[in-house]
Amino acid sequence: MAIFRSFAFKYSSVVYRNRLFSSMTDSRGLVLGVYSDEKTKSNKLTKAAEKYNAQTNGQLLQLIDLAGPISNGSQRTFWGLGGYTAVSVVGLGDGAKDWDALEKIDGEKENVRIAAGVGVKALAANKIFNIELDDLESAQSAAEGAHLASYIYQEFRAADKQKKIPELQVLSDSSKKDEWNFGKVLANSQNWARTLSNTPANHMTPTLFAENVAKNMAKGVEVVAHDRQWAEQQGMGSFLSVSNGSAQPPIFLELTYRGIDSAENPIALVGKGITFDSGGISIKPSAKMDAMRADMSGGAIVAATINALAETGAKVYVKGFIPLTENMPGGRATKPGDVFKSRNGKTICVDNTDAEGRLVLIDALDYAADFKPQFILDIATLTGAMSVALGDCLTGAFVNNDKLWQHLEKASESSGDRLWRMPLLKHYTKQMTDFSAYDLDNIAKSGKGGGSCTAAAFLREFVPKDTPWVHLDIAPVMGDTSDQSYLGEGMCGRPLRTIYELIAQNYQRK
Image (cartoon, rainbow, N blue to C red; front, top):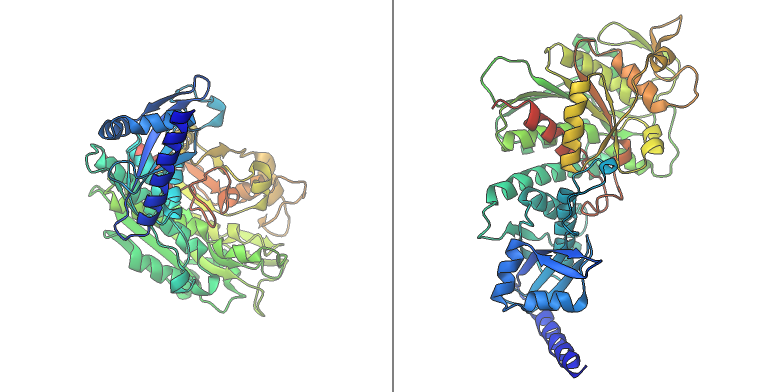
């Protein structure tokens, strides 16, 4: 007992002394990993942590063992240990590889993301902003978790009230710097998508969105903003019908990234770009309507995904299509029951102006099909029904091609942004097309639920039958999700890393 008291006194003095040091500008923090078995109460350090433990003459492991295992996703901070102001040791689980297959996730990679995020947040909370990280034996995942966790949207907060963002780097002797930098690019691209989605709607109109993309997009990407006149010439009556009630002009944003010189067909990404969704004449309830500034999250993710592909030099040819408009209840707004003609000639009765996302997407899908793409992927915060079905940890995926789904599912397991396949049945199609006065209605005939499925069936009518296609309904993961602690509050930018993984791993020219 006397030994413990003596140690406790010594340790507390170290805590006190170094908290004073932590306010200094040269304060440095370190994040290290440990695998802990709570059953046997044993701890195993990562390779980088083992090296640091040797430098402290075994004191690091001694301190960990004294207080017991560090559970998965938690951390313990040690002050004045070695050459750093503070060392955050993060729990990586027990290192076992028998993850539950039903979870549909690479648990080892996700544990690393969570742990890296926990460590960075702990050090930043103690005013330490110069942080080095162990690669946690999965450098890309560590970089993703760390940079996603350090993101804060605070653009309109007073300068003296803004929180400082940590400067992050992998340990200088890490052999995985390229992997770290790769993960950093993906995370920063996702953070850009989060910023686009978090920005208040009066600062992110269709015009301002297009300007932001043109200004911040990586080199090598062509950005073309088509105006209303161009959309009219294209016959995009469905897209333009949504813009009728807004004073802000619509823009159809077209992005082109050619990472290869060959003439092969592109991959087409289509993102919903409703920069604010009031519901139009079918107006939404006022509660939480402010979140509808992020109804352009699909478009933000398309732009940010193409940015990531360009920054990493991916050997692919990708086209992005983002129909941008507000959905407002102005004097010229679409009225329930109005009928419009889409780009492919089909007529649509708009019985609910709050089902507008599908109306802007279909003209973009039809335009994308003109390029004969290898596949089309559209992404949209489309239906509240999907959130009811899946909660806040999954994206709903509707896919017309089994091989494409297999690639997509594998990508989602690796990225940690999970998807769940939903049904594309003729039963749902009939609900959207069985009308005598017009070709389609934008809401289902029966009204007996399945709103996400009928919305996907509506979109399917505008995709060529021989074109592989996936529709991602990201309403469940638009913002404030609870399964990825490293994301924090606000809009999420999910599942950008899944889309990147899908393209890079399966369609990149070797």
